Image (cartoon, rainbow, N blue to C red; front, side, top):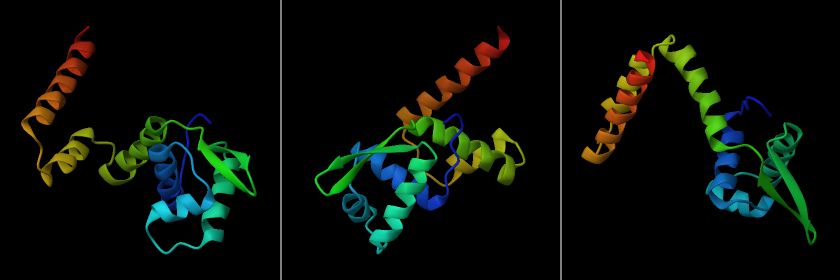
Length: 125
């Protein structure tokens, strides 16, 4: 799967699998912490398997699902979509929105500055 594209609910389920490493339908449903029907979680896991995002192994009478897609790849795709559709391709507007409504620790801010400086240095090379 080159560029994964997930719906909101698919991302919810992938997030559970990324955090836990694997899960049965019942475990994923419980981890979602919402009232989502078992059959809904099952159907979404089946769709994710068709997309090549998860695989399953038999575990007794149930299946255990494992993520096949790296969260970074999914994040890149989702972020690119947000950048284009909401911020008209402006990384500056996206960054402003990202940092304006949150408390950012001095350490995190320093790491962000270093990342931006590193990118700037690469562009100058």
